[in-house]
Image (cartoon, rainbow, N blue to C red; front, top):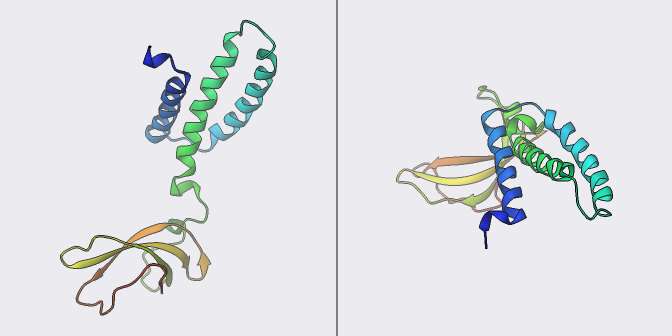
Length: 152
């Protein structure tokens, strides 16, 4: 049995190549339109290919391009730059901003700090999303925070 001849291995490899190319050479959402176009072409080629005994190579090429575009788009979708409600678009270095945080998880405490993962729910009453690591000095915290606690 040859490992590389499995279709899922080939598709996974092309998906990883799409993710890596998005990481090292990011383009704006250009590939979203390409992914939509390739999906339509892939569906049309599938309709033709299912009736043929011997498939032409266009179906395979479009399938690989679709997986490549899917990996590229999936990586870009998770970047904060392309999320319009991410807190990094609203946060500035102004110390008078009011952040609303919701504790999601306790982390392993350090020597001097207690660490929490917190979801940023709002900045100056503007709804946002994102996750931050919150460090609170052990000498300043009298009570330990629990998950689902909300801080301002």
